[in-house]
Image (cartoon, rainbow, N blue to C red; front, side, top):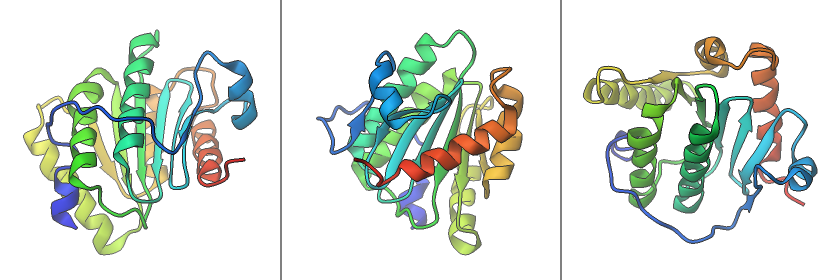
Length: 198
């Protein structure tokens, strides 16, 4: 397992992919957004094991099942779009739930593109390795190792739980959108969207 997650955020070439088996909501489409999002959380992509959403100036990615290259590439596209269009710095909350298996090689390369090309343009990126114990320790160990080889100004932080992540992201939140409690609510809402299409 350590080997699989050890390359999660390392450098790689940009890969292209075709459409995936997930729903995509266009930011400019208020009709679609209202159908699957609350007024505060915009669901941008969702499938049976993953969700990508935007809350204020925070990109939220939650991985419950096996990471797929198609959704990972879509998350990269969403992140690039958000960073390019946001008038304020963007933060990222990346949650790896306890039962999410390590990504395959192709997906790992696409995730590496995110860390190399997109996170460098964000105010902060926090990775939550849920599950505790040995698994969480492995993911955190990989994170610490990666921050040693990334540029000294690495914006990645690695924590074991949502409360730790929220504490790190809170100073980077857009004023007036609900602060830490709003971010926690957004995460809970997004978790509820995984596998609940239709």
